Length: 266
Ligand SMILES: Nc1ncnc2c1ncn2[C@@H]1O[C@H](COP(=O)(O)OP(=O)(O)O)[C@@H](O)[C@H]1O
Ligand SMILES: [Mg+2]
Image (tube, rainbow, N blue to C red):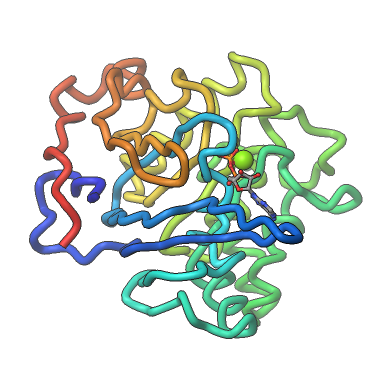
């Protein structure tokens, strides 16, 4: 199934994520667990997609494959045109660091290190010069509204601010997409709302492609599309009912949320 391209521009765009017939099996002694059982999925640039489903439906397994942290047992995965399903661990690591920004439930920041240095980290792995690192990390922190907290360490920041630092870190490499696994799971409702508004704003204003896993229907309402997983299969893809963030900010007319219906995978 396809996520449907925003703005009806699907025909001109190549999907960032193009998955066909992905399955993933885990071997537990004599037992084979089929975590994914033939998933087809396309996600187009500029979309903002949530993955939902009951516990055990395969959300984390799918996320790990999308993020090149794991490879499928069978099926194809083209990420931004590159066939990543059969890549070596080494090449996958490079794809991860260049094309994907990760945001985790527990922020995963280095504790003894300033916000600025945390955001610079992915750039070190990609061999960016010291001066450019500073500049890019500053810009990313300003984008998440933390320009005045750059020298603070994680324990000098609130949970919401720490997650903003993590989002800046995910953005700093100009990735093709950001993957977030339960990004509001450790935050209170109000702070979670702030973070979802920030994601929606980054998607709307900066055209950043976002895919997030959540078990919370309220959270999925901030996204444009929701992929429903069940028993290792995509059961349905729906337009998100509220597209809440847009309504909250009231700057964008309600019909801006309109996206085309899902099309079958090619
Ligand atoms: N490393 C693993 N080894 C064995 N079974 C696993 C492993 N990871 C996931 N599974 C199984 O695969 C299924 C899907 O798991 P998961 O992707 O974690 O689901 P979700 O994130 O939706 O709760 C579950 O039945 C789970 O027990
Ligand atoms: Mg999970």
